Length: 322
Image (tube, rainbow, N blue to C red; front, side, top):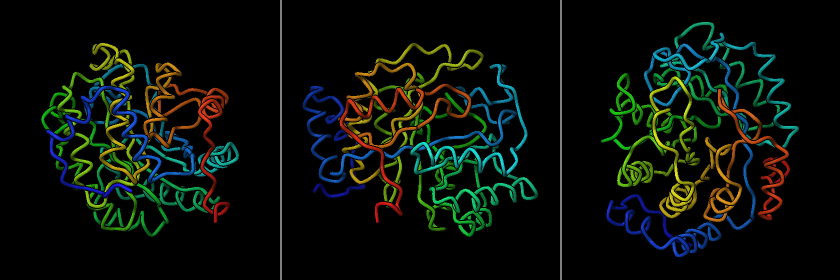
């Protein structure tokens, strides 16, 4: 089993990325099988619990108040509606339920208290809980941990150098500070990024290196292909070559062997064959359900057939696996 490292260099990462495709896939597959031998894929369902009106200017995001991307804003959902969605997700095979709120940072008060209640009630269903709420204070992180939160998602998005081309309303170190707070509170970390936003290959390497330098590595690493939503600045970027995503998945597996690598947004535009290569190379988590926050995702029957073709099975709930 390969040793976990936190000292990868840019030259090492780039040399792996640039290997002939089949050699890269073979190496990633070997590492994947050493650390994840069971052939299981975690199914995660994502629900937008508060949509639109975000003051951040992330160039890819249709929920930003800076752009007119046709997203209809909504207030924070009732707890009962969220719990019902979580129950449906669990019944459909998901073992993690992710709740996203379009905030720069949550404010103290009734809305944050309602999110804490969502976590408690979803957790009581016997499904892992994950939220993404923006930046957090130490006290908010403590309260999330006390509510039983399993994971916190806070993506780095891209490299430090490319970051200002995509976002100007929040700094790169702000994101890393939130991840440190989450880790210190004992909540697991879900952090990844997006490719296809005009970044260089080295920018992609630097994103993965930032994640791989975290000790421990993030338990979950979502790798997203840009969804080009009309009305957002990122809609003008050219389509991504699917094999670029395959290489990114393979490299994430090599740099962070024990993490769950999630094949995330952008799959609706990804050929089935490319998705199978991503699963072969080390992706062992996907979003399950026909919608992400505000963008489409393959429906469950299509993903069920994808897993069947790959000879993979959904990860069993922890209680069933014990």
